[in-house]
Image 1 (cartoon, rainbow, N blue to C red):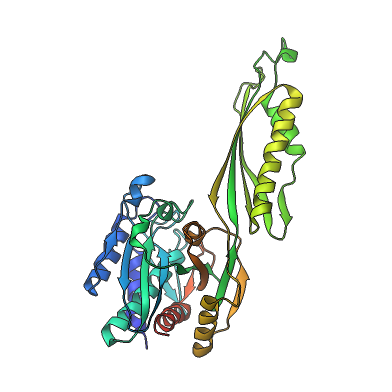
Image 2: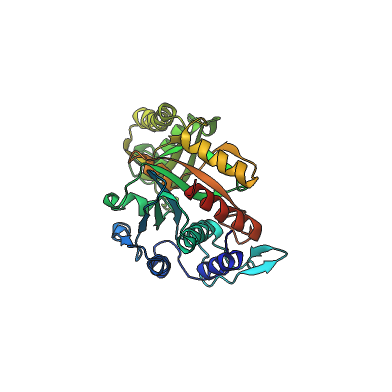
Length: 368
């Protein structure tokens, strides 16, 4: 029922619009114009000003004869690097690049699929549910577009976010929260050759603290990783400052907080033992979400997959998405697989068939 040629053409056009994070304006302008051409009254905000981006979030509302609580269909407009000058290539029904850039299927396949579903509804006057369309910026690198969004635009309290690899029919019903740990260890400088005993090595303190930490895979719900240790001094100087950045992720809020506290406690204990000072900030980047399989939203998606002949299956997420930030606003939701593979790499690709399937799933969910 969708226009497969138009959908593919739209996707190919979208991926060729440069929109690396913080430089999304051209893509924002394009989808805004596309929605307005369909008769939508489009709302935008000033989210980009909150994180030095030239872009903005794009929102439209489609009231439907079928009524019901509004469902937000969402995808993000920005891409990771290298995402400029993308030239898509089609080989045996698969869209990819020459390997010099990403493809930007993450997440422009979601954007194109939502847009095609809406076009079909508008062109054919198909009765639909109350539907919201939200195209966000700044998802890559911390969901900053959603964090800075004008929430007065939003009506609904449930969301379907099209932003996962995996087959169409995959439904991520839970995802982890994340806490980042920013710590600075302050020791005492001294000449390392003449009087090292008079110094307190911030590097040594950090090493002692790290040696006592539980890291990497903590349990099936929780991970923890140190990403940065920075202390740049000459070898004849006892370093008096060491910077430390780590993250904790968990689908369980109590475990998330406990693991973050464990990291801080290990650093504090090492500082106390060796006479150093700890400056530490625990920053909650986003919270977890968890929707039971028996929930009405999940069951609606299951029914749609059944009608379309897709293999419905639920999964647990390991990364963050805009949905994690929506959860802070009381929005219940799931993340859908859209068929993209090897995202964030120059080997990224998507099958045209999966692009079509994703648009059909959006259309079915909007009209049932």
